[in-house]
Length: 332
Image 1 (cartoon, rainbow, N blue to C red):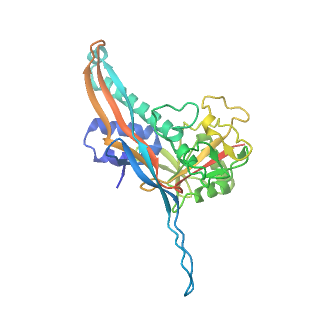
Image 2: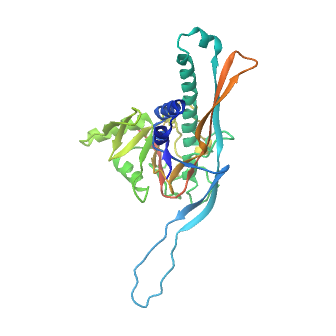
Image 3: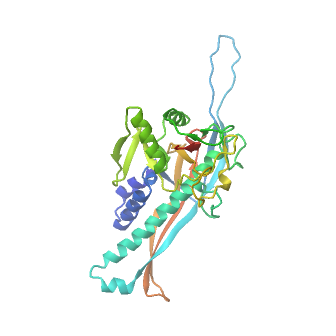
């Protein structure tokens, strides 16, 4: 059974590791929900379900038709996410409480890990800012659910059942469309809807106009959270609402999306993800027991002591119908 980072924090007896995990979850709420599978070796091999089995009704004497699910072998490699945190000896010796200087330095590095992971969780392998060593993100995994196969990067609302295009280029979100997105994740409901703050505000406004409201709650580490029809809404500040219009044929060319572009007309769209987590769904990967801290010690050329944070990690989607995305969606 895969554990989430929040569960790992409860199981850990190491105060520093617990603090790092808490910081990461506060910075990236999706990390509090995503379970992680421990991988032996440098990669995770799995069977990807491309088509569910069928069943039918028969009369006595009928010829029975064989219909099993279709699978293909896939492999996801782990990558190394990490960074070094230096504590200046002068600052450490001149402050009365030594922990006051070390704790925020390491917390800052944990925050950087959270931001890097969430960015790759969304965009890994796509967009013009993709990095060579980052793991593949959920947008590319969904793109690869296309009938065109695993070489596909762009999100095609015509040939991919897990891509829902609000329009050929751009259309305002409706609650009916959000319900349809949720229904594309099956069997079972998604465990979260992931979107920008702007999209969450729009859903709030649409719910109030319909005579209801989103249910408010707080996560395990105090994160503010709302739910739509019992499904938590996870806000990501890495979804920037500057996504270009679709290409006129219900396709989002995410492979050429530049996340630094200014939000102007025709570059004012967003996307919403519906995600189901766990085995045979979307799951995080790690090796070595999760996030590791290594005390490097005093450097020869700097008056500092160094602590290294490292995480052998990755992400994989093990089934066709466990995640879906709405594209070409706008709030006005």
